[in-house]
Length: 293
Image 1 (cartoon, helix red, strand yellow):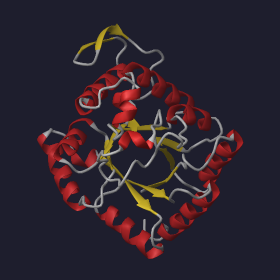
Image 2 (cartoon, helix red, strand yellow):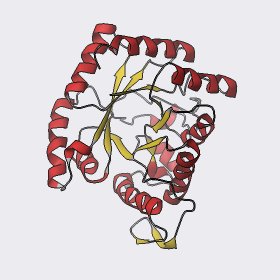
Image 3 (cartoon, rainbow, N blue to C red):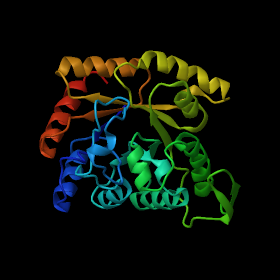
């Protein structure tokens, strides 16, 4: 099982030397991957007055929450690391131009030596969608079409495609990546999300609310690929363990996900504390799990 750590978007600041040092320290500590959240624009909290945000009491990020753009960030950090994998969680794909994402992701993967894993999703921030002139209401269906288009742009010398959101007439990106990039889907346990994972994804990144049952979801996810004529053994599972409680809690969470077939565990050390302290906490978590995984 591979172990990752969450990049402290809101707490690391903007000093490039500090950001580079963090990535090198993550690699030196033996982590397999670095995972970064995604928001393009920030929105004032007043925009969410009266709105329900699934999984949150209020907006978790607003206009003054700093976010480094993941693909640009990863292209920079690839130059100061040698083996660390870079993972988006999740790139909010329907907010973006699909050919542009295909081009950017291919370039990061090429320049990093094949170290990008693209996890995509639909996000929750309707106001951010508005600011980007993207349609929040159709984001689920748009995402599915985008995944098809991404894979074709990465693997075919010329692409002709006609869909609801894309019209491509003999279009290419050059250079293409040296491999078909892995696309994982992040989201909850609803039937439409699990069906989308089974039909389109290389893996699932559970982003769960407290009321959602991962055991039930995994049982359903194992059955769905059979309906889609896919082998469930080929799916990855990247779960999150948060630094609440202590070592006994971390070990119990890891064992639960291990029993469910997790291939990856990402350690989240919390928010609102300095980035070096978050790394120290994640290292302690990693050490506690060493005898379990």
